[in-house]
Image 1 (cartoon, rainbow, N blue to C red):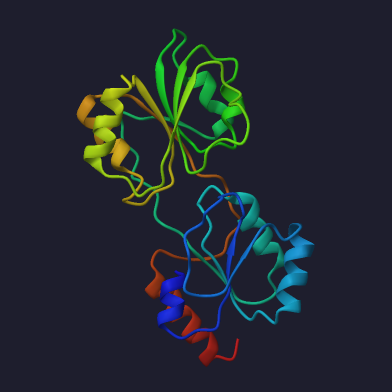
Image 2 (image 1 turned 30 degrees about the vertical axis):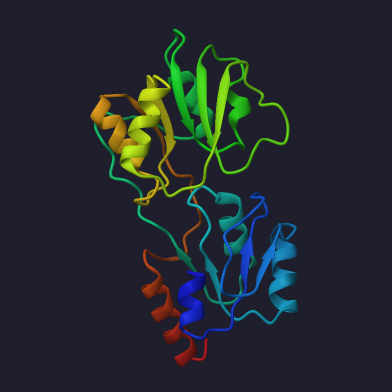
Length: 228
């Protein structure tokens, strides 16, 4: 999205959550870190004379997205990639807290593709976990039996197929984040006939939503034309 704004010559600032040590460089000014909740975000928008907000956060960043809806008394839209179409072979759960109960009772080798924030939920389960993290862990993992690979996507089918075979994975846990770059593990799982536990997206308050940067740019242009 930052590249689209830069190409269109739109004055903008890109905000990172600050959870990644080496975020991808952007062609527009950037900031990093939280805002301090709804009030802090509202203060930032006013202090910096922001006229429009594009919520391009991860589909599971429900807290930030909800804060944006509450904080914005200016035009707000979300760039939200469509979720993956549900597969009948998947085990679907409503939230990440429901995943441990959906795992096998007997020890299994699980590719836990959920990032690092919630891995503590699995500390008391008997499984071996393969993690794929963007940054090396700053502290020992809260899992008794785990192996972490440090890698940054997008990933491809051949690489993920080899990964699942090398680590003898029995089952995959994934968020329904959508996007082609993250679905390689699901295509590889289908090839190997592996079960997938799929976590449904969290609820986010209603907002104007678009699936592509071009749609967002048209929205920005129309908002400016209307003097919104």
